[in-house]
Length: 298
Image (tube, rainbow, N blue to C red; front, side, top):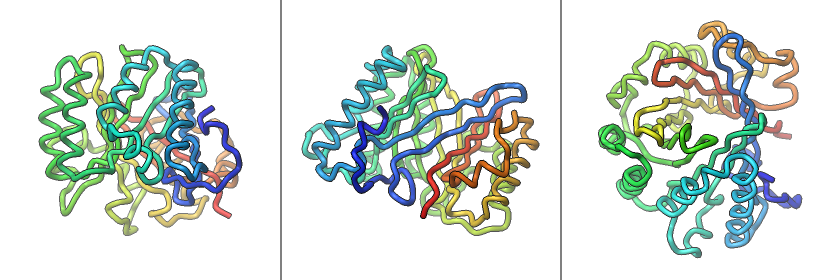
């Protein structure tokens, strides 16, 4: 469903470093909680024709909404209408596709992510601001944050996550620009000790390009307040062996008091590669660890 009936053609996706269109996301939260497992996909990634790719992606979105979160259709429509080009031909011409989809394997909840990589930097933030003005009941908090992000970060995508309008979150994904640091954003959650501890644990003394770290912030659609923040670190930008990664994951689980992985550690990265690893904090600073897995490059 997520891959829109993949026909076995050559992949043309930017979801992973090898062009493959699928990830498994395992999210670990407090001790005793069951892991949340999602599939994230770039639908119709093998379609060479942009219009065909967009048409098939739209069909996949309709199917995922119907099965996982039918009440989110108006919010998903707003993502597309307010953040992607209005002209179908321009939308179809976006490189590497326009949208990604995700679904929770427990049976409820989905996500739609749309690229923001078109137009100038200020235009991207202006589109996001107008979109949030439309879907949030109060957008003053979002305005204050976007004012700071717009001068310090590059917006790369926006999205909706959730199962119903009551628990839905509007998400913005970005990379820091120039010489800006997390402390320059003025967002208290990013100044939490947990964030610096996570980065130190995962990166240690290795060098990593600035593009290898993606930040995000979410807003509750029901209230307009901040729902969470997250930092994702590219697994291919931090040089580690699979065994090193498993040790880093285990140390992070212990550091933040999270539920352990429900698999034998030696087997996890023998059958998949670590695409990203991320630390999220909700508004109460409760941590979660997100592990994104992809197929092994041959």
